[in-house]
Amino acid sequence: MGTYAVTGAASGMGQAVVQKLTAEGHRVIGVDIRQADVVADLSDAAGRALAVREVLDLAGGRLDGAVMAAGLGPVPVPERFPTIAAVNYLGVVELLEGWREALAAGGGAKVVVFGSNSTTTTPAVPEAPVRALLKKDTAKAVRSLRFLGGRAAPFVYASSKIAVSRWVRRTAVGPDWAGAGIRMNVIAPGAILTPLLQRQLDTPSEAKAIHSFPVPTGGFGKPEHIADWVHMMLSDSAEFLCGSVVVVDGGSEAYFRPDAWPRTVPLRQMVGYVRRFKGFKPAARVADAPAAAVAPAPQ
Image (cartoon, rainbow, N blue to C red):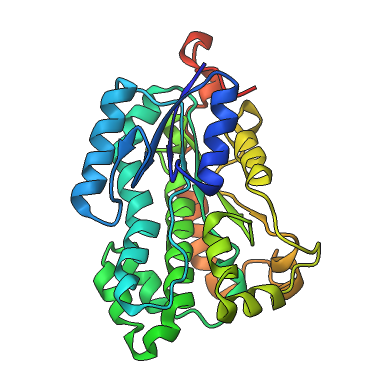
């Protein structure tokens, strides 16, 4: 059985993932701000460092996978914006950077990062906060949206999820990740009935907007649905899945942007495309490694 780190393990989709993995006999090291094996505040640099250190200690320096489910929603309170940006971006990136060697040691480890369908269904998200987050400058990211006041909440949230999704796509294909046998991907849920969504539904001003949001399949998803997808993305079936964003949102993204993707490479990007094409260096495949070095995946 494998050893997996799961952030946001105490509730919602993270908890559903923990339950599914532990039911199969896997060892799960849960990280959350409460009721977890590792109690840490991921909005704080010291808390993130503690989470890295304690998970590595508990795992003995070897992880078969990680699920980054911790996250904060778009709360319309400006004082909370720095916390949202820090948890949703730095709480993923800094932990995974700290765990990379342990994941590489796992021999075929899988990583699932929780994004959001807000990355494509929230219109007019500025590039400035996304660029700032990719440089780990959460203060600048929030500052770039301060002119919107409390109305910036959906943009703070969406920009944090756009940034973390881009980080995954940029990083997952590199020699230190794909080349080290690690498969890292993003799952982008839509409206899932978690405690976070329930709190929004219990607020009349927010509930009306949530219920009016287009979901072609109707209703809300369940945490168990997402846990099933995560389980697959942690399994051997995901060996050829790398740097992908899997949208599970009842069709909302497709409803809004049916023609946005896939698209061909535009002419203005051809120079960069050709440069990357020629600069590619194949990595050794984990499948070519001795069988004993490859950890068992969820079945």
